[in-house]
Length: 346
Image (cartoon, rainbow, N blue to C red; front, side, top):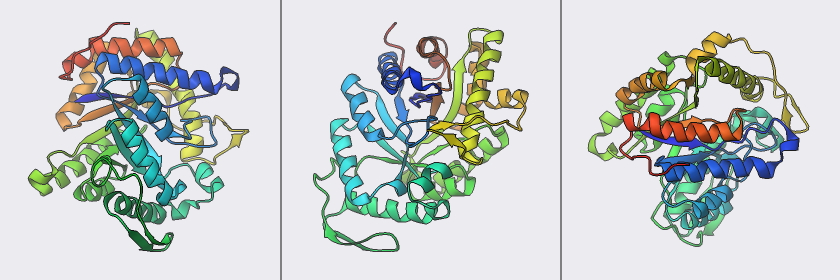
C-alpha cells in the first residue's frame, strides 16, 4: 500500500491569503516528494473556501516544477464544468509539463451550490459527465473526431498537440456507490473512493465491488488500482487526538453544508452548520490517531487490497503541524506498509 497527500485547500480565514494557502500546499508536496510518498492529489472546486482549487491542472504543473519523482493525481476534476474540446488540449499540455507524472482523476461534481451557479443543473451532472468522458477519451485517442450527442455537437477536429501516449494520461474514476465502482472497474478505470464519515461496512462493500470486477477481468485488469481517500492526521497524544477531531468536526460542519446540505455560502465562505453525527462516531470514522493506533487501523486496509491511501491532512490544522505530521508519518508509519523508504529529513 502506497501513500498520497491530498493538497486540499481549507481557507476559513480570508485574511490568511490565498497565496499563503497555496504556498503551504506546495511545501507539503515538496516534503512528500523528499520523503518517499508515492503521490500528491489535487481537488477541483470553485466559488467556495472549502477544498478551494479552481485550477488543478495549472497547480499540477507548478508541483511538477518543484518536485522530482512524485506522481500528481487530480482527485478529482469536474468534467461537466469544462468544454472537452479545449480541456483535452489542456490535459495534454499538463501531461507534457508534468513529464508523464499525471493521473487524471475525474468525476461529475458533488456540490450543488458550485455546479448550479456555474450553469450545470445537479440532475444533469451524470449524463453530462458520461458524455463529457466519452468525448474526452475520443479526443485523446483519435484524430478528426466529430460528435453528435445531447450536449456536444461538432464537426471533425483534432486536438493539438497530440498526447504523449494514445488515450492520454491514465484515468481514475471517483465513485462512492459500490455498484458504480464495479461497473467502472469493468470498463478498465482506476478507482478512487471514500466512505467519507461513513462506517466500515460501506468501505468493505466498496472494496468488494472493485475486487469482484477485477477478478472477473483477470490478467487484463492486473494494473488497475484502488485508491481510498480519508481525512487523517498523526496525533502526538490522546489529548492532541481529541483536539484534532474537534477541528475535523468544524471542517465537516462546513463540508456537509455544501455536500449534502443547503449550500449556505456567504461571500465565498461556507457557513458551518450543526451536525447530526456525534463527535464519538466521527472520531471512529476518521484516521486521526496516534502512531500505534494508525498502524493498527491501516493494517486492515492493506489486507483488503487497497493500493493507495490519500490522506487529507488539510482540515484546519496549523501549517507547521501538518508538515511535522508528514515527516513523522514517513518515519513512524510508512515503513510498516510501503516499499519506498523515507529519503530525507526536515
